[in-house]
Amino acid sequence: MDVHEYQAKELLSQFGVVVPKGAVAFSPDQAVYAATELGGSFWAVKAQVHAGARGKAGGIKLCKTYHEVRDAAADLLGKNLVTNQTGPEGKPVQRVYVELAEPFEKEFYLASSSTVRRSASA
View 1: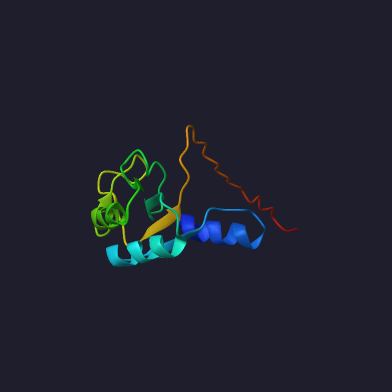
View 2 (view 1 turned 135 degrees about the vertical axis):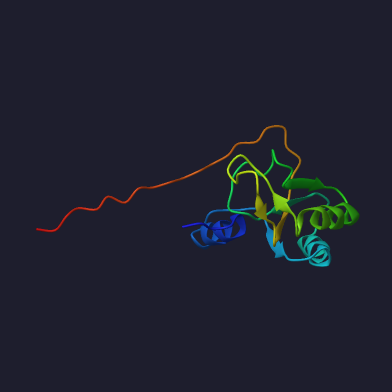
């Protein structure tokens, strides 16, 4: 099952996992509106595609002003994001996730996968 980051975070929050506040945007104006509603003064604008390594491919932009949020969303939306998981054609960015961010010194990634084993019936 492929889910976007914002969908996964919504699901995790329903089970009590604390996640940063964020909102989905389909246009640069919606991205700015999301940032104003979230408050704060530092946001991450993240391309929502079913692929990893978005940051390395330029699909995650850190912004300190509403103008930067607008520019980041405009730069990402409607483009194909090419990562090592998408192949050379990339994947189209149809939405971005605007997330309230905190300055950081180090980052970590968490991933999970599972395999369902099937047994033959007698």
